[in-house]
Amino acid sequence: MTDEPEYDYVIVGGGTAGCVLAARLTEDPDCRVCVIEGGPSDVGDERILRLRNWINLLGSEFDYGYTTVEQPRGNSHILHSRARVLGGCSSHNTVISFLPLPEDLDDWVDRGCTGWGPDVLLPYRHRLQNRIVPVADKDRNPIARDFVTAAASALGVPVIEDFNARPFAEGAGFFSLAYEPESNRRSSASVAYLHPVLDRPNLTLRLETWAYGLLPDGDGRLTRVQVRQSDGTTATVRAARDMLLCAGAIDTPRLLLLSGVGPAQQLRDLGIEVRADVPGVGENLLDHPESVIVWETHGPLPPNSAMDSDAGLFLRRAPRGPRPDLMFHFYQVPFTVNTERLGHPAIEHGVCMTPNVPRARSVGRMWLADADPTRQPCLDFRYFTDPEGYDEKTIVDGLGIAREVAAAAPLRDWLKREVAPGPDIRTDAELSAYGRKAAHTVYHPAGTCRMGADDDPLAVLDPQLRVRGVSGVRVVDASLFPTMPTINPMLTVLLAAERAVDLIKGTRQPGEAR
Ligand SMILES: Cc1cc2nc3c(=O)[nH]c(=O)nc-3n(C[C@H](O)[C@H](O)[C@H](O)COP(=O)(O)OP(=O)(O)OC[C@H]3O[C@@H](n4cnc5c(N)ncnc54)[C@H](O)[C@@H]3O)c2cc1C
Image (cartoon, rainbow, N blue to C red; front, side, top):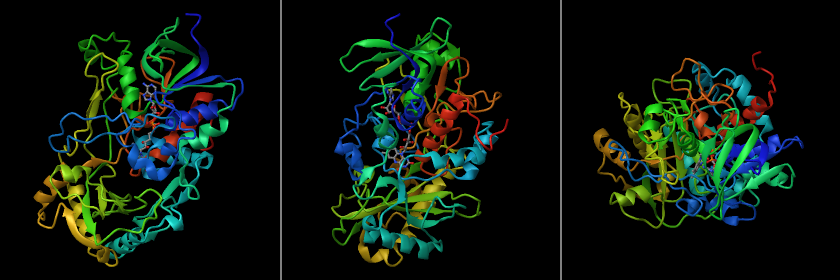
């Protein structure tokens, strides 16, 4: 046991949140931190660093590529990409950067997450190290500009210059991205937080190293982690203070379940020794479901872009609530992986719109298929199963609204024909059937170790991010979300990680209740 390497903190997962923790905690030269990361480094790897290459990373060696159980009301063929590289999903995503809406965080407080309201979390935006800028003028493709103009005029909404300005308004516009326009380099969590500090002697990175179980120390704290190293050998690594789980919304609950922390009966059925009966581990699997509508264009499009999905739209449908309830990405490439499978034509030149459900009501769950740590867990997003049919209706509305935008000048002049679903698909029932079968994910799984009040039986974490029922373990990644924010969640993860640093260090923030 004495040859076990020991650090003050062990971070499992050098992803979006993990990079923030590693950089911040090693600011104190006396604090020794080890990051266990399943993937390789991104340093100097243009495949990762060049933002516009993101689409080629889907399904690549840098993608764990999770699948789902059958989705009777949705699409059973979605590949749930999760990054296997330093920086995690911030190293292969589209780095669209939205602050969470204050009302999204009010929802968290309502769920018993004291200290996570907008007054506490949003000020952390000033600490973010990522370079976040609006899509640069040179990257604004003419067809994306015309999408923005058409959406604004067809729907009577404003053109938005900065979606992060307050108050958050509905409207169409170019996104803000975490990138360097000059080089098209992403400003991922790894680039922004880790690259500048890689030479710190108190920071150890163990790359291509996979964590597959947590073990107790002599005091019963779950502060030892079993890992499989790149050469196939196994080892254990110990945290003198806390074990910080940052493996993401699929792999963090997976690791807890493999370690005997989860719903007791489920674990017993798999022959896993129960260390703590925590019924919420793996429950509350959230996502942003989307669908797609595709047009062929009259010819090839001008080539410039930041990452081929640079603009979008947020809309409030009636009854008009305080937050948008429909969101679109506009792609200046045809994203036809799901439509071709359904028999719609492949096209050389085209665009698409992908309406999504910002606060989907269908909630899923994940669980282990068996006790084998190498076996992928089972994911059931339960897409489009909410009893009110709200998610389904949002997609139907979205497809109809997309057609209104496409019919408006100046966008309409670019478009030759709608290829999916095609003009014959018109009724709500037809649009629903198509929209659900062609559905995709916006790649935002979250919520599987949700934070919540003491009396919430499915809350896995307390508001200090400590795992209930065990000691020595905190979770800091998208699995902590009690509810899904309206917007793409990367900045929410980064803000939560910055906040977690203060919780771990015991620092109180302005605005935080005593
Ligand atoms: C294709 C794609 C596009 C996206 N686009 C956007 C966008 O434009 N804007 C936005 O806001 N959000 C976007 N997202 C979502 C956003 O990137 C994620 O929600 C966020 O990055 C998740 O951060 P995380 O820290 O929870 O997990 P991750 O960033 O996934 O980090 C988890 C890390 O843990 C490592 N790991 C996992 N298990 C283990 C283990 N057992 N042992 C060791 N290491 C392990 C992984 O290799 C990974 O590095 C996108 C996601 C994807 C996949």
